[in-house]
Amino acid sequence: MRRTGAARYKASRAGAKPHVSDVMLSEPAATKASPGPAAIASRVVSIAEAKKNFSELCSRASYGRDTIVVTKHGRPFVAIVGMDELERAMALEDRRAVEILEQAIATSPGTTKVEPRSEE
Image (cartoon, rainbow, N blue to C red; front, top):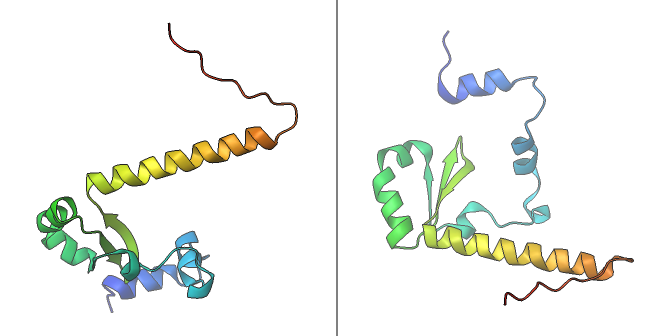
């Protein structure tokens, strides 16, 4: 008997070591640091639906500022976000990295804070 789709995927994974994403996604919800896909997305769609409606989903993400989470085999796989949202997230990440670096410099013995030279 020939297996297709999810049955073939599960059979290929039988007896295999769990993948890191399997371990992360199988943790109890109470121990997760981040909210589930429904909490952060305005829409959750399967990968098959995303393929059919890719252009519409991209427009919704860009112009409607929606966040679309695409699932694969029922698990969060990727997200579609607009460029404004991506740039905002990257700026927050950069600010947080600078704060961590400044804190490390301030608390490390034997380091001196160097101020940038002013261009004259």
